[in-house]
Image (cartoon, chains in turn red, green):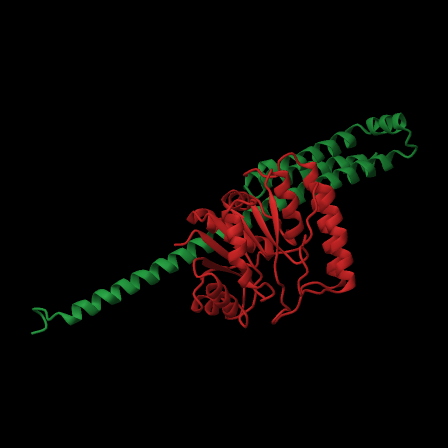
Length: 236
Length: 135
């Protein structure tokens, strides 16, 4: 067993999941991989297992937050020191992972965030999307007190403290932004590192107009509520 | 006066129904308090309609029955908030259960696989060695 676990939530990603697992194991052979299949109805689980991942099959679809948290609970139970999140749709480049992991091992922050905007990278996005990101950045900056450039990045390495925190509480959906404020409120540090972003290989982005509005309202509300809490996490 | 007799009858039937649900353990005590409370309020108001009038006059409501609507409305509001709180708690517990079961199942399956591999190895080793029985 290695000391770092990659958590990959996957919902019907049979075409890409094996490639993602492969590319991670090629880039960093010294990590374990858990694929949390969130009630997939295709061959996601089999493909992932064949590629060499440990597969947890949720019998009911829990949504992205519930699926990811399953990975963190598994990491906590098995005593992993670091947990890594990377999107299963192939947007994130695992070649950056050794660098992120090294930063985490050196204790540069409780969470190392793979960011698209720290330095100039090849990534481009639409105008409305950039507007939304700027809005979120401002919001997070107000809540956290220091700037975070890529607030919606789902590419990250966290240490044991955060594994334990996420095991007891993890946002239900659209977790990226809320997590930043949650960590800040629990006195944990975030360190951003530039990474390359690739175009999606398969599948559709889950963002459309109606969802974007829901996203903005939900995230704003979540951040606002987070600020009203003393310390966010308690066991029930 | 008739409507008040009807009110008393209704609230008695309502209270009886709630108590019966509790007796059969269909309704848990912790959720029944609200309903018992409402039944008792309706009963009291039906038995002593002058109370309703008195309160209505005191808070400046000219048409006493509208106070009744107000009380009913507020009560429903409270009940529904309470229900969504309970629902949220249930959701949280269900999620946790699904997670725990999924992890357990995955670990069990994993253990099973290693055990089969071990067994396969032992069987191969046994097959390679000639035994007494194989003569």
